[in-house]
Image 1 (spheres, rainbow, N blue to C red):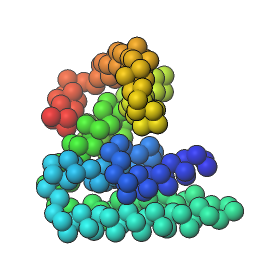
Image 2 (image 1 turned 90 degrees about the vertical axis):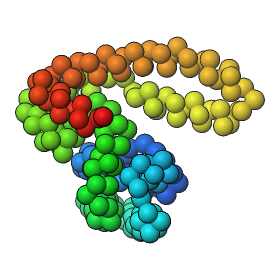
Image 3 (image 1 turned 60 degrees about the vertical axis):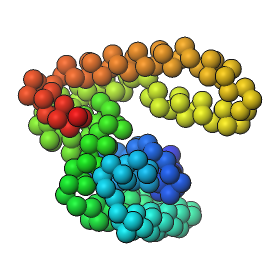
Image 4 (image 1 turned 120 degrees about the horizontal axis):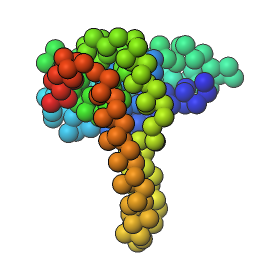
Length: 208
C-alpha cells in the first residue's frame, strides 16, 4: 500500500513538473486520471485550454501536492484521505473544463493509456463490457510485459546522465524495445478479440 501512496504523491509532483503519462491510480477512472495530462502544452492545445484554465490547473495541482505531502508525513499515513484528496483535485480540474474539452481530454487519455484503458470503469461502461469481459482483459494485462513507455523513460534517464554515449545507450535497448513493442501489439490484439463487433466500433470511436 505504501508504494501505491507514493505513486499518488508522484502523480501530483509529475503534473506540476510537466510529465505526460497517465498515473497508475486504480481508484480513479480514466476521465479523472486524464486530468494529469493537462500540464502537457500539446494536450492543452488539443483541448483548447485557456490561460485562465491553465492557471487554475496549476493551483489545483499545487494544492494537491501540498495536501498529500502533509498527509504522508504522518507516522501512519491516512491512505483513504490521500486518495480522496487525489479524487477531489481531479474533480476540481474537470469542473473547469467545458463538455467539449472533457470529451477531447477523454480521447487524449484513451490514446495515452492504449488498450489498457479497456479495464477502466468509465471506459468499460461506455463500451458496455460485461464483468467477464473485463476480467478476461485484465488477465491479459496481468501477464503482459512492462509497458514500452517505461523502457523509454529508463533510456531517457540514462542518456541524460551520459549524453556523450547516447547512441550506445540507444543501441543497447534496441532489441528490448522491439521485443516489448511486438508483445504489446500481440496483447492488444488479444484484448480486442474479447470485444463484440459493436464494442469494437465503440472503441474505435473513442480512439479516433
